[in-house]
Length: 247
Image (tube, rainbow, N blue to C red; front, side, top):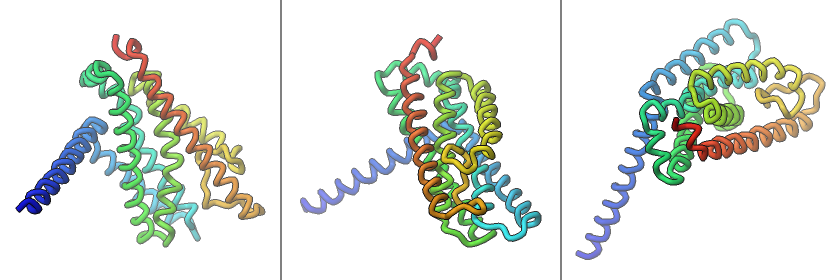
């Protein structure tokens, strides 16, 4: 009798925590995407399908580097809205005032939200990679999705940092678009270096040794990962300035 009670209580606790995590995740996703989550997923999928059709009909002998190039756009699109408009969404719904009223709670909330945003983006990109695997060419799905997350993490963390400085969704979007255009302009110049944000590890330049390119790719991923951490921590640090957000 005692064992059955213990098992029942353990299962009840597991159910309670699972239900709590599910409700918290669902609630935060509603806040993050402001009820527009499905539209951004559909828009990302539409972009991927259109770019895939264009790739099939206009490119002969496409390979993994071509698939990487068309998958990075849906990834950026998925992470763009929640990181750019997150702070403004909190301010518009008066949630920001509540967060600042609880010591250090805002850090925990935004850390959880950003982790959820990036994990969800990775999961969706993983599904998109499977679509590309069956619809275009075979490739390592996990490796492709993993490589795509480095520039997505970089741009998403940068967008979060900028949003804590600008404190306006539309203003942050404009700044990020300008930064994105500048990064694209310099991507060709930096294409053979580790500093290119849009570095494509699958696109090995002609007359370059594969070992050298592999080393450049590793250094590029390290650069993007460390920069993402700096942007992430910088955004959380900016949230300390309560007077800048609540006027």
